[in-house]
Amino acid sequence: MTTYKGSCHCGRIRFEVDANISVVDDCNCSLCFRKGMLYVEVLPERFRLISGKEALTLYRPYVAKHYFCKHCGCHTFIHPRSDPEVWEINVRCLEGFDLSKIKIEPFDGKGWPEA
Image (cartoon, one colour):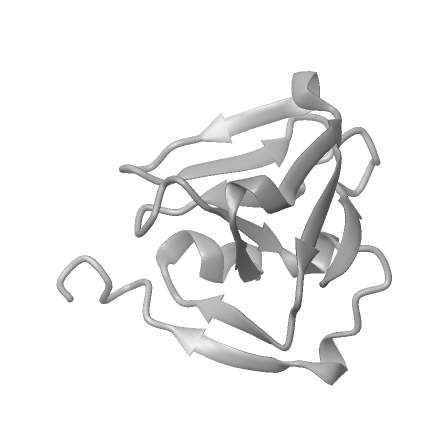
């Protein structure tokens, strides 16, 4: 298991996750598609918010909780509607993460409610 450090663009929000990342999901729901989020799911005990709790802003369409920095607007992580207890981490916010070394799988977030 690797510990990854992550942050928003301005650095006010800092976090760590423990994960083995070989595949990430590319969701086509109306929000994830617009923000270009590529995510990996992690259990609550493998996520640590290091700093920036006061900088977090919550956007809550339906059940999902999308967190972003109120200063720079960067979307860092969410509690998804499919499993509100886990975290989905935007791998684009992880320091030094190399997207060329992993598989990107499509996730049908648009069709998820009907499925």
